[in-house]
Image (cartoon, rainbow, N blue to C red; front, side, top):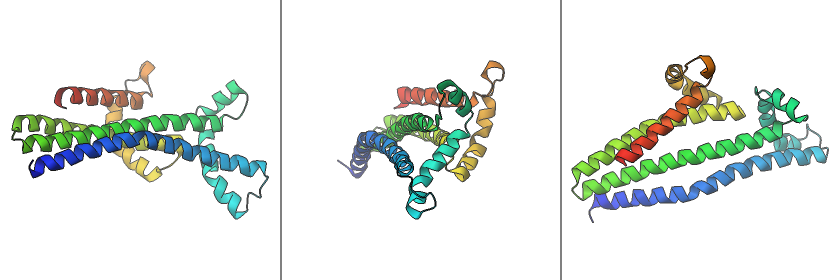
Length: 211
């Protein structure tokens, strides 16, 4: 086994390791948000001084998340529908959605690593045509992965109000594509979702044909 095939095999093994770790990352995101919310609930139950150092730092992350949820366009309709403050419920739903999106992005990263590894293995085995096919597919996945990463940053910002500078950069890069998918009429305001679906289909097509 030459050096290229050896490196390729290592990259494929790394991809499998990352894929196995994806579920743990998903769980870690949910656990972190639940802990943040519990700290705020405990601080309120114990009636801690909100200006105290412990209470301030323990409740600040949850207060930021709740504040962002209350600024969402869905907040007041949900509040009328449920009859109570739905901010914490919205955080949990948003966290589940975010976890799923991150898990999906890890899947694309895994595809990229496997494509890279298979490209190196094919070159090492003296199969240039197969290597070229894998290389084209891998480069296309990189392009799609980049666009989806920009959309993920915007999505995180819209849900939690985080990564504001990064979200501004991401929006400037992705805005021309969003304008293309802004069809108006009954589809007005759905360009973000339509673009995400289009990129997802494109990724599936690339994987089916090249990888």
